[in-house]
Image 1: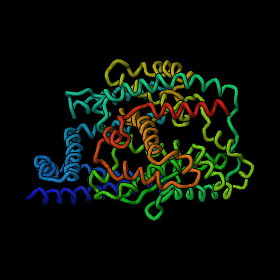
Image 2: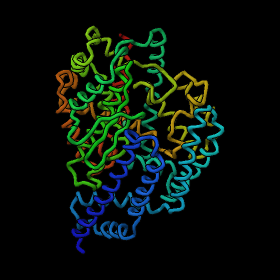
Image 3: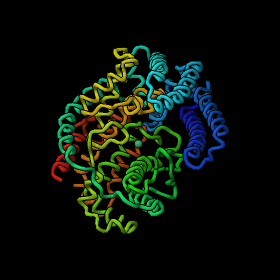
Image 4: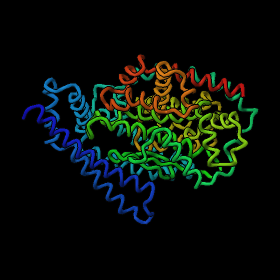
Length: 500
Ligand code: ZN
């Protein structure tokens, strides 16, 4: 078989994998949105079966031989084909080094620990979860060693979420970010201590009108409803069923901001997915680059666009058409309400200025767990010490502390940094966009989002996995990933809050 024929066969196989994965995601999407509660067991079985079939396909010897054969003849392929083969080889090498027994043990542990975490959080009892966390850390170390025993375990885990990223790259970035944020948070605490939470955008906003409003916002930003939907879920998320992109949000009839910013965030993810369309379906060039890059797209639209003055010059008149109660709400009041910030305990409810310190804290703790310098039993104490140091607030309970996130109980160690990488990529991309298109505020105020979306399509979306995240960012912005644009953005935000 010629290399060209083998490549054609590879693409056909990858498309089948993608279609199976899409069917799986449709079942999962339905479970989180419309599925009646009484059929949970049936659905779990259906999802388990399909996931098993997909895993068998991924480690099928005929498929792995095809990938190895092509990887050995990569010089016979064109550049794009070589990307597809190289990326497929990288993913399948990671998968095949984990034997089936280890994978089964790991997923059984995660399933059990997830249930235990729910109970531990409800009862505010860290000691119930601790033995499971010990086993999870141990098994993640074994996973890392199985994939590549010669490298730092945390690096191997991190790379599973952000390929191409390493502790050597992240460490100086996170240190600089942390040192830059600490004085900002101190100033923020001084500002907010004497100010009540802003009341604009809170009140009575009927959910029916909010549904129309949020749909309008997503469409105006560029989301294509001919190939997607916006529905509701308890924990908003987005997913792709092939080229069909499903967004979810959650409505609070007493606060316009909640659904709006969930919708804009998920729309950012959705625009990225819809922008991957240009590449051959099912191939790595047609898949998103990394979790960090994915998050950069959601945070860019949510924070850099959605909380800016320009955007609100556009949005407030639109919002008034849906909610007459906003007639008397001023631009200044709305801007203050959507940029509200203060040091707090819960990561998912925190603001732009303090958010990344919640992540730095988790990154430092999980690294120490993996390298053995921190014991699981000492985690709550270490959590409190870092909260006091970084944010100046300390939780009274572990429920509002170390038990608040599901990630570690689900075995996701090395995942947290992708949130902050997303924030800093977003700020860096916007800096570059403004050098090319001029100040975004003017475009946003005019409701013109096409130029920004077009730039992102060209420099991020259309590339899929052509480059790994660090290289993608370097090519798009001309600089390696840096915390500086994000710090400058947050300094401007703080100055706005101090002067309001
Ligand atoms: Zn997200």
